[in-house]
Image 1 (cartoon, one colour):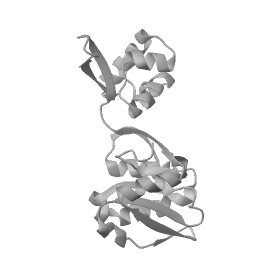
Image 2 (cartoon, rainbow, N blue to C red):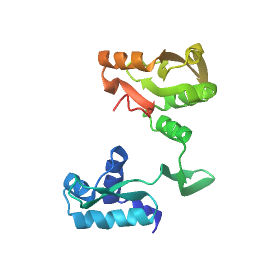
Image 3 (cartoon, rainbow, N blue to C red):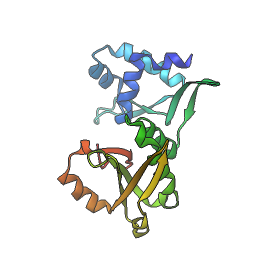
Image 4 (cartoon, helix red, strand yellow):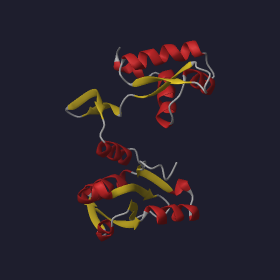
Amino acid sequence: MEQELLFTASKWEIIKLITANDRSPLELAQLLHTSVANISQQLKGLETAGLVKKERIKNGGKGLPRLLYSLANDCSYLITAAKDFAGKKLVPLSAYNKIILKIWFLDNPEQRYPLEKAFWNMEPYWEKIDGLFLDQYMSTDDLHLMVVSKSKQVGSLCPLISKSEGKSCKTHFHVFSPEDWKKELTKREAKDFYALYDPNKFVS
């Protein structure tokens, strides 16, 4: 199947729904206001392309099998149109790749380079980090990264100065234990934070 056909509007809506939770064809049909037959056809194409996978589970003790669909793997369909370089490719994503893509998806282009630099500056501590969030409310001229970690070593991160296209930006690291971060979230609104890395779903 041509890769462009994998991302038609109907298939894309299915992909978005199953990135949040595993779904059955019936659930998807109800959420998208269409027939189960239509959803099953779309899912078959996505499964053949290796984008989704299915699992049979027992349905509430009735003994009837039920199919649940989930993403087969993390990937990105990249389309590039730049001077001297044009291409399109479906590529697998690591956890590192996903963070960089989330940075690129920020609306403010001036935030992207300092955040990339901050991210790579954190590389020695990465295995000790449980969450990474950009405080969108506090981040104006300076950027404020909220780092969740059980390790005291991560607390040694110092503010980082970045310069790009003649502009200077300081990135501040605010380190919280998982318990303190949960308390902080009770004082703030979830929309204040842009999740760059959130495997524990602190911010839903």
